[in-house]
Image (cartoon, rainbow, N blue to C red; front, side, top):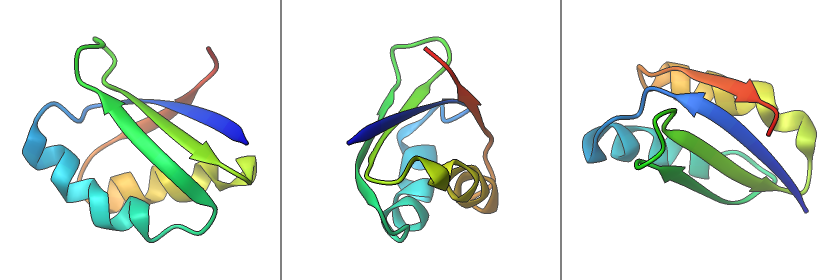
Length: 72
């Protein structure tokens, strides 16, 4: 299991709801979470394939938001 982390601008429950369907549609995502208490609104993705980072960023962008891969 791999963990990918993304800095986002998902600041509300409506924003998180907007990215839910696109993220859930990506193969190889076993789960994801947005830490709304973190100043970077950290999106954490559990995956079996760490090559999906671009797909995650594209899915968030298509929903009208931004995600940037970060190393923790």
